[in-house]
Image (cartoon, rainbow, N blue to C red; front, side, top):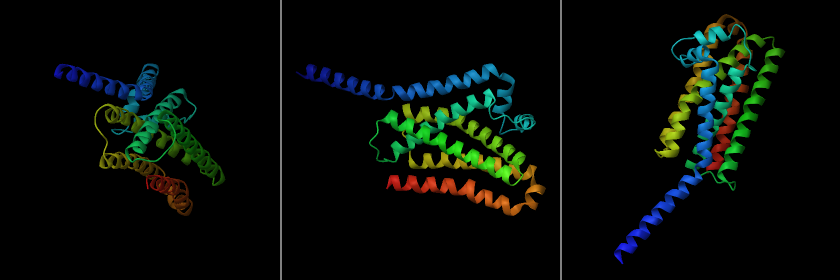
Amino acid sequence: MNYINFNLSIIAIVQALERSFISNDWITIVIVACVALVVLVKVAYEARFIDFTELLVNEKYLLKANKEIKFQDPFNIILFAAQLLSVSLFIYIAFVQFGVSVTLAPVLLYIRIALVYVVFVALKFFIERMMGVLFDGEHILSSYQFQKLSYRSFFALILLPVNALFVYGLQPSLLLIQIIIGVFVIFNLISLINTLRRYENLIYYNLFYFILYLCALEIAPYFILYKVFSKSVN
């Protein structure tokens, strides 16, 4: 009888592990897709990718790219696709960890998060472009936008193994999530500081418009998202 109970216990454990593995199949596909995109961009643009990976050490990548900024460049598009998948997965993990009440299936929740992320980034991008044209500062804003895109793509690459660790190993805590969000803020601040340093004289003579831009398009959108997320958690 003890032998039978022991076998039944093993079967129950195996079934439980199997169900858990199946529930993460779509997450595995997302992570593999991110890795495939990174490998693709490394193989297709090896020299440029090496410069990109040294983004925090030197500005060689930004100095080369700023000579001819093209957001529609395949290199930038592939990196943004990886950024979209990786950042959306992290947001999904945060939603699950904080117990945000949703009625959607996990994969549908992830797709909705990814769609919201794309719409948010695209809408913010085009509003910034319009403001640049309106206030005759299109070149400065283009440079700043490109720096933000580069740093966020770099952040997404760092986030990829972190996401895998959260899914398959370490249970994410509130502190870890906050630290990662803090790192994201630091990456944005680095981009802003580089822009300030490069165009300090021009910004000084247009300080009012620069402060208006920061309040309207750099602080307010994230503050609104924070409030919405806080209400969802509560």
